[in-house]
Length: 181
Image (cartoon, rainbow, N blue to C red; front, side):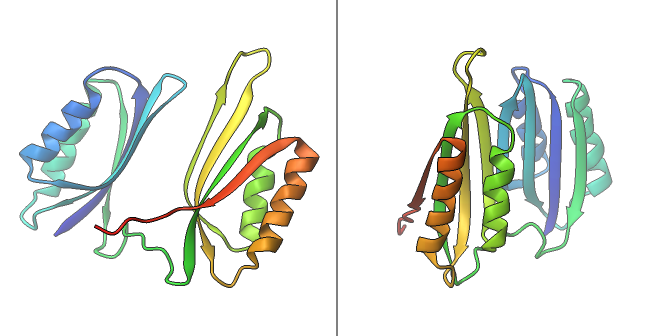
């Protein structure tokens, strides 16, 4: 099996996802992991895909880049080894969602992520937005994290609370409940 990481960015337009997924379909590729979003009118996409061993990688890359050019997208395609691109939470870590909101100010993302790094918390997904009126925007940040089991959770929450008080933020930490399928 061939694995590729694809990233693409450019002005948001209708039809981008359809054009890319048609190429994937035509080449018998499977989307294993994907993140697509619009940031300030810029469409950005990151995909990890798998394809058959018989995939002509150079031809596939050319076809996919051509699809991106039709939308003036900048596209990068990188080959992954079989283990690269797979993410598994450490067996001893627990999934938590950390939600932060407050008046927009410099340093929110830095202060929170610096603290998480101190506790060796892995950030699996990071999303942030400014919402509300441009005269008084509210910063919202959502972090999907993996907190090592050995972390003193009460200490981590107390340190997050210190930042919340210093910066006048609301910070909520909730365990992600996984469902059994």
